[in-house]
Amino acid sequence: MKYYVIKHSCETKITGTSSTQILDSAAEYNFYDPRSSLMLGFSLANKNTLWPVGIVKHKSVKMTDLLSVSAMGLNQKLIVSEKLKNILFSKSTLGVQPIAIKIKKGDTEYNYWVIHPYKSDFSFLDFPSSVIGLTDRMLKNELDEVSFNSFEAFYNAFEKSQKDAITQGFDDFKPLQIRKAIIKPDNPYYFFAFYPLRNYSIAFVVSEKLKNEIIDAKCTGIEFFEL
Image 1 (cartoon, helix red, strand yellow):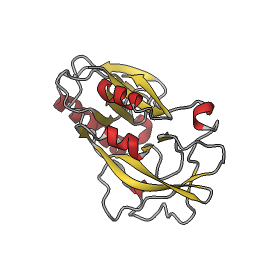
Image 2 (cartoon, one colour):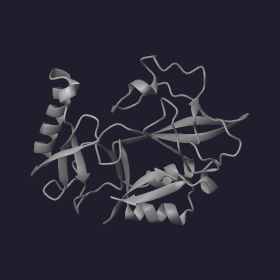
Image 3 (cartoon, one colour):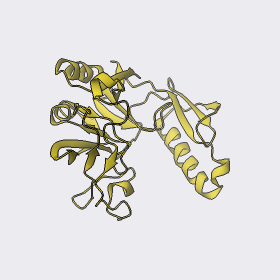
């Protein structure tokens, strides 16, 4: 089965803007509150988590099924309509959590869902076939490739690289990066998120079956890139 990274459309005729659709968060949102979504990282949100109201500033912006976002507290997540959310969560998922939020455009509030990534255990990767390597700390220059024969070996190395960034200093940090991801044939998940994938800070991935369902449902504002 093929898999695809799902991203927002960059076409002005589809989104109604040449910039980001959700540019800001409501002024009353406190980013520094320890309960804010900005502080979540890769962990589950709960009923006490504070989410901002996303602000659409330009009248020309179209309220597509997937909205692009740069607002703090919502970035590095998917902002989706009820229709798209229902398709994404119609089958087995891993590490993605839907939370109802409000998006405001002018005086009108819209009901949307933020898809929050909270877990990436890499269990779906075929490690012997995937290509993994080191990069410099700015993720600009690719360094040596590294081979792993199992999830456990990769996970241990990944955890060590994160700790090294703290204990050895950021200047010498050489993070691991997945350059080519091969998904196991028996992978049971249809929608999942993982990082660090080349060219993506966080990759939200759907199966070919879900991709076709999204296209058949005529969901808007979406582009697919084969994994």
